[in-house]
Length: 506
Ligand code: GLN
Image (cartoon, rainbow, N blue to C red; front, side):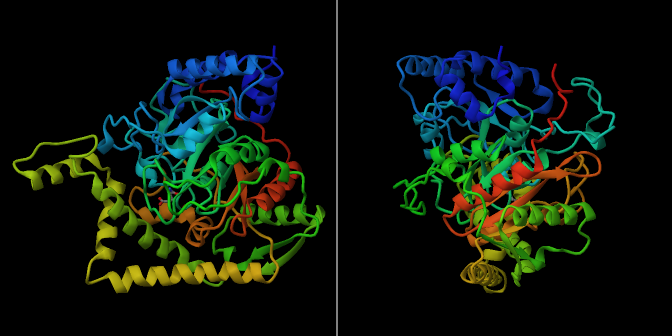
């Protein structure tokens, strides 16, 4: 019997088409795995009935030799994507039991291509965070543990703080579910690193495509000029397959690009011979752990051995990216989140008059981090501070974009950096007194969103305690293909990720 949980998405799609197993069998195996893994808290809603109905329909199409490229393949969906008739909360109390009457464009394209929905995945509230600890459903526990760490089996409780690790965020449920083999792939979103950082923390592959590559329609908005959807999957090829279905022009999103969607999976064997890979000196930040530095060196050696030319480059405005991001993103968030007023969606807390109702609803409905972002956002957009903060941050954003444009104009095809400044940390370990400690997770990823570029995180090694570490490749606008090609070179050189032991299975 095929081990259905350890196939890649590409292998599973092939097994379905060649009738080695059915989608009902495959989907059943994943539903079981998810039900046994509740200790990870990766799913906030399991939809077994819907999954099995979709799987049966897929089997019907497969039997007739019909069906799309993802026919019968079970996926997890980040709870930021609106799913028609299925509760969607962005992991915020304020959305309560919101059941969207529409389907996001990205998910509807996955269903069009035959994919099966297993359920909705946990994330940081409104995708604000880097550890999945701000979710109203509680933190996701990473399937990874430090070598030799003494975490008790699922259900023993009490051992969460300190021993259990975060999966990263905000797409923590997506990354944990893929790493723990609870789904074949997952949707995710990335505003400042929320696909790439959790992928790096969990030994999975995640790509944030170019801004405009995927439609944002039907995705709960955080910061609209930065938000992009993308996949998290087990390997580079699976990410390429998923992105092809997720991407494409959508007249309902005016920022979506009217460009053909390439066959990304066809690009993975292109190699890097003849390409120029830039190493930006500004990413060698003070206090960078030796193992991250060594990983980065190793990555450039692998690309050089595969035929790329590796050159040093400068992206001089890098150090302003994080502070500018934490002005632009909250500004847009404060505006986007104004719609949660207790009238139109989800939670309503009654008050003596309408203003009191707004205040009470928003005070109870939003968590602390979201409230902080709304306060920062409203402040930087206020008449007195708009020019001093918001306008300056936008100017910095332009300078960051120009840094990349200059590197690409000089012939650089892609840029290699570490994905994160460290491996995964413990639940409760960071940011409780100082939010900036948490924000620093995004130093290598936010520049990419600020410039609207594509970026991929690929597992490349382990830290001293056996935790996965990732490298990031940043590409030219709409050149995800080069990222898949170079990402595949790193994946091949690094070897298959050893899986975390299934300590969580109940
Ligand atoms: N960690 C970053 C933040 O909190 C990015 C989150 C994201 O990409 N959605 O804003």
